Image (tube, rainbow, N blue to C red):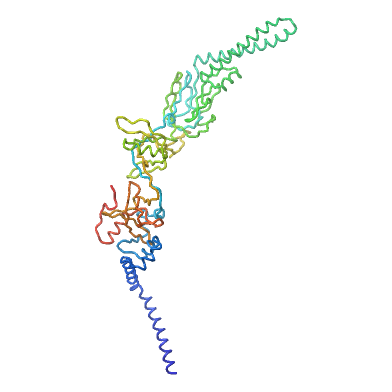
Length: 495
């Protein structure tokens, strides 16, 4: 009995002792647990550094798994950085700027100077009067935006040739009617034998001559600028048209109804807009207004100049040594990027622009080849004031920019923004996300331009690794400050 009792006492003593040790360990974990973790991590790293055979064999089955994610189980203090939410926002590391690495196609590019220009024969539309007259109404003001089909001018005709042509046409119509009535009468009396048939035959010949003359006069009126519908109107109403109305044309289409002769007044364009069968709804800017109320104009005089800025060209200047590369980009239908310089050294990039065509001659003085790129435009401001519409376009002729033209294509590359790379001496780093830390990873940059860096796919980074796409220079400076070293103000900058 004594032995059994003593055994139970010893058993309960061990249990109570273990409980006390566990409680004490938990209570003092803040003191010994970090040191223990550090010792374990250092031991693991040292085993990897000395080529531990068992661990190397385990990692040989999956190189990516070995890189990932066991290797970063701990954080080396000198190469790992933990950032607060405020610090992340300060350097612009939003969720969109922390993304997995992926393989993609990279196109090496050259940069050439360029300028925004008009499209010849499309951007500018000159409106001229086809007939002589006096301007009675000007329904638009300079700088106003008008839709195709908007009434622009009314002109009272003083064009003598047109007046005479209309008069002769109406006169011939009357003579033809008289001949038709005479022929109808002669047909009745000829059947009774009271009038010989030769008399009817003469009237038929006279009618045929009037029909031929009328056909010629219709064509003459069309040559004066009247449409077929307007000629029919004169024929139907037997009235001379006294006023010419000129509507805004389309920049890409032409309709005869852009000119209309009428005797009835029209209200100004901002009270009534008339669509003349044009599907183009792009507003046109009245760039130049060349006439005023009461001015006499001759046939062919310019009334105004309208501009269509909905699509422009970018004129690039390729240097002689870049011509072959430019032709390759055009043949492969590679898109180019336009880079507009903004205030505060910022750059606005317009991506995915198509090459329209290349010039077929080299400028003998500058030794450059001009080429043209489509630039779709957009309205940045549209407002109405005093019944008139005013439109401001985003891109304007004369703006200078640079074009980034691809000249070579590399497939399956690790491509990061240039802000994702920090440089210090001969070393180049990116920062990989590991939990709530960012670990500095040394990489080799095989190519770098103003915007992108191509990272060598040598195992330092793998597709799927999450890296910071921005703020690498700031994080490198933070690591240097953390280590107590001096800050190189030029670290991470590339000039």
